[in-house]
Structures are given as C-alpha cells and as structure tokens.
Length: 405
Ligand SMILES: Nc1ncnc2c1ncn2[C@@H]1O[C@H](COP(=O)(O)OP(=O)(O)O)[C@@H](O)[C@H]1O
Ligand SMILES: O=C(OP(=O)(O)O)[C@H](O)COP(=O)(O)O
Image 1: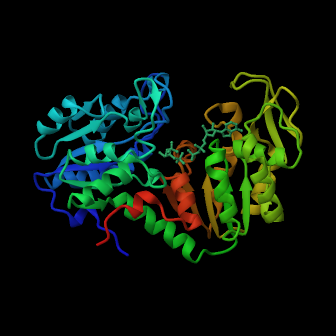
Image 2 (image 1 turned 45 degrees about the vertical axis):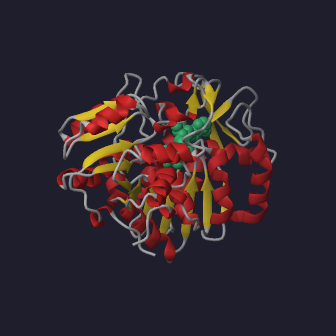
Image 3 (image 1 turned 135 degrees about the vertical axis):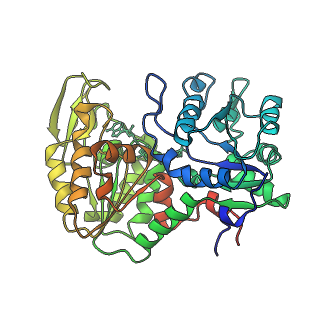
C-alpha cells in the first residue's frame, strides 16, 4: 500500500512536526563529526520551509539510561550545524516539553525552523530510567502530537524503533484526524533497498560488523535464507568466536547471545565467514600495545580490528558478489591503528564494477565517507539497524505508522 508523502500535504502556515534521524557523531570539542544524516534530511526540511510550513523537528542523540548519560547528548551542536546547512537561523529549545517549548512553537513564523532537545532525555525523569520515549509512553506521543497540525516522519534510520517520537506521535496524530506523512528520504531509502533485495543479483553477500551485537545478531538468522554469504567482522565477530570455543580475551562479547551465535553457525554452515586473524591490543586506546594474532585472542587482550589475512579472506568472498549490503565497521576505525580492516573492505567494495553495493549505518557511512569511496558505491543508506531489518523483510514500525494514501 502506498504511503502518504510530505508533498501530499498542505503545509501553508501549518505547524509541521517532523521526526528526523540526527543521531550523528559529536566530536570531543562539541561539533557534528559527520553530517551525512543531516544532509540527507535537507530536501524534506527545505520543502517544508519553501511551502511556508513551520518546521518543528524532533530527533534523538545516543542512548540515555542515567542522568549522567545526558551530558554530551544535547542537540545544541546539531542545531548550530543545521543552521549552517540551511543558511538560516534554527531555534534550539533545550527541553522536550512544557511552556518554554510551547511558547517557542507559538512564536514561529512561516518558514522558521525549530529543533527540540534530544527526545531520549524523556527516558530518564528525576533520575529514574522510565523510558517514556523508547518505551513509547502513549501520553508522551499524545503531548507531542498536540503541538502541531501534521506530522512528517523522515527518520529512516530510526524506523525500526517503536518510540514515542515516531510511532507514538503518528498514532496520536491519526487519532486526532491530523495527517501523517513520510519524507523524501524515507521514500528514497525504501526504493533503493526494496529494489536491491526484491530480486537481488547473485551472489548476494551481507557484511556485518560494529558494536551493536545484541541488536543485530537476530538479523543474521533471517538473512541466512536470503543471502549467499554473510561476512561477520568488527565487534560482532567475537561472540561467534566464543560460540566456536575460540578464546576471546577481553574482546567485546554478548555472553547471553553465545547460544544464538551457536545456532546461527550450525544453521549457516559455510555461508558464514568469520575473521581468521585480528589486531589485538591491551587496552581500548589507539596508543595501546597492539599486534596481529591468528585465531585465539590472548588473555588480557582485546580484538579491535580484523587482520590482513581476514581482509584477504573477505575480499575473496566479495570479488564475485553482484549485490553487497554492509552494516557495521570491521574494527574501531575511529582510532587509526584499528581502521585498516574497515578501510580495506570499503576500498574493495569501491572497486567492484558490476555490483550493487549498499552501505548502511551511522558509523559505517561515516567510515566510507572518510575513505572517499562513498561515490563509488550504489547507495549510502542512513539506516544501519533499520536497513538490516528492512532487508530481513520485517515491517518497520516507523514506516507502518505513516498513513496509507
Ligand atoms: N572489535 C571491536 N570492538 C569494539 N568496538 C568495535 C569493534 N569493531 C567495531 N567497533 C565499533 O562499532 C561501532 C559501530 O557499530 P554500529 O553502531 O553497530 O555500526 P553502525 O553505526 O554503522 O550501524 C564503532 O564505534 C566501532 O568503533
Ligand atoms: O544510529 C542508529 O542506528 P544504527 O547505528 O543501526 O544506524 C539510529 O539512529 C537508531 O539509534 P538506536 O540504535 O540508538 O535506536
């Protein structure tokens, strides 16, 4: 069923609530480190401005479980960066509810842009982890929905979450008879990912890495029936090492997912390709003592990148691929000593001539952009977990909640 899109709405003089994915890296000096996701949302924001709407933007940054977590997770630097990108002022409201927010919204004129504080501040109230946003508290969705005339959800990267700021607002808006639409980014992502996986050209290879192991390990099981090979690198690999009885030292591991990993290995057999060597370090730091080891990770060491032998193994699998979907860096690429694996895989994908190559996820995308290979790939998706779940064939709650045409 086709979904309502922002261009279907009458925006003139309307308070247009927007949900965007501005979950971007913030540098140590408090600036936006990579603005791919923000740039990707500009067409929809500009459309709202040009059609005389008042853009009221909701977005999240990081995950918040304690009061302490709120430090460094304010969207203020994102507002400043957005103002530069749009070349117009952006009003930043440092709270997520109350009179200050309501007054600021009431003061908006046509074409103005306002960014609300990190929606996940609502997860911790009075020091308690109440998960109002990420638990989709209906009262919060209703409150936010009451602030606007229509809702435009363009946060593809967050579409796999059932949260108050995407699903909650949508449901409350619909209940109040107000329009709920998707944005242009949502439309573009669905088109590219849908086309690539409906009838994928084979061999179809998925590459998974990164650190959100418990989030993404479940995806592998479903992908097994769709792809010809799954390459697993990055922090994800060591839960699989543990499942195979290979020593992992102090490497990232999700202990309660080792059984899941075992089942995936049994079911996947030689479809699953793991690193054969790793770069290990004695601490999580670029200047730590580090070396390359095959197989077992020594006691007291942690694996922070794949090694040169793994790179060759992965390239061998990838060289004949016709469709490649990649999410999650192969190592801690933010630190130069552990960036080689991610670099090598990104560069290799850029050399594949007759292949559809799709990279998704905040960190993976920022890695391929740093490498300068982004323009050699078919599609850079703003969603990591979201694109994976879309590929699995799952209905994403954020998309499902957009009104049908
Ligand atoms: N071996 C590893 N150990 C710990 N962290 C890792 C390892 N490999 C990659 N990472 C981290 O994974 C993070 C990205 O993971 P994730 O959020 O799942 O990817 P994406 O944002 O692309 O979806 C990066 O910050 C990177 O440093
Ligand atoms: O960065 C995101 O996901 P991704 O790392 O899978 O691309 C999205 O903004 C969702 O964030 P979340 O995984 O904290 O819910």
